[in-house]
Image (cartoon, rainbow, N blue to C red):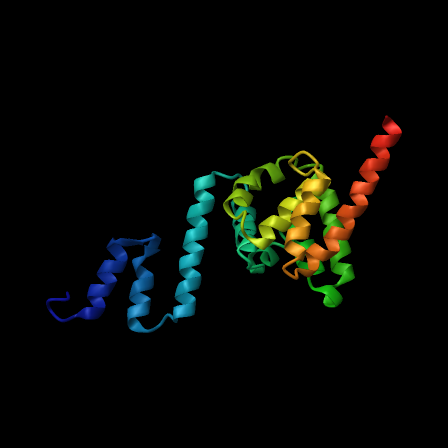
Length: 206
């Protein structure tokens, strides 16, 4: 088709028959759209990132693909995938993340939403024991990202999928709070309280 001068059909043939591999698999259909000018660079970046996330989650063999994909996007700093699952998810980690997202808004946070997320989390957490263990590979993958650090700190603070370690949680929250993160500053106060509570409980038990 290219030799005959029919560029459009040539691109369509490539799109139908071949997947190019540029860092991660990118469908040639995207290249065809880009060539025709029907796909902006921002849209292309979004599509490429979407493919990368899909490949990452597939490689982890997780049971709840949608939740893991949304959490990966959250760790990357994009909450939109989490918000899409607000009314459909049965995974407690989603509502944990939604609470963090809402409480990170500071004075603009919606208390009713926060209470709703806490209730849904409480309703689901006892039925989904392995949810936090399942996202550990993602946390390890994104361990340098702020949202992953916050989530890991909360897991340590409350003993969710890991051994409870309030001191380690406080260290992580302190590190993040120093960068000016509002949520980490708020959580740091909570971690201080938990450390005091743990100390009191240990003293009483001794």
